[in-house]
Each structure stands twice: as C-alpha cells, then as structure tokens.
Length: 78
View: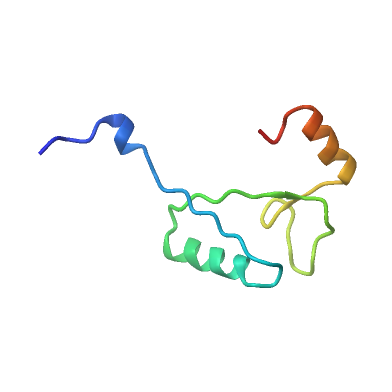
C-alpha cells in the first residue's frame, strides 16, 4: 500500500453550516468543537449588532456597514 504524501496528509474536510437565524447553528458548532477539540473554526464578520451573550471575536467579528464596504474595496474578504 502506498504511503500518503505530505501534501495528502495535510488535507482536511471543510464543513459549511448554513441555516436560517435561530435554527441552532451556534449550538451545533459548539457541540462539535467540544467533541472534536482539534476542529478549526472560522469566525465570520457581521454588520448586525451583537445578540445577548455573543462575544466579539468568539461568535462573530462585529463591524459597521461602512467598514464592511471598505473591506470589499480592499479585497479583504477574498
């Protein structure tokens, strides 16, 4: 049997969790991260205000609509 190359060994899986507001995405992601502590998690930016209990840099990066538009102009979201 062939051994995986270093490049193959570094490959992983990408999971995208998408659902309407209030469907439980945060609850699901927190449970997955508890069960799989090596799982990497990408924190999104949002222009909406924080909801009760949400923390900057933990749940989202909360930015203004103007900062978001400037990020688009600077290609920051690519």
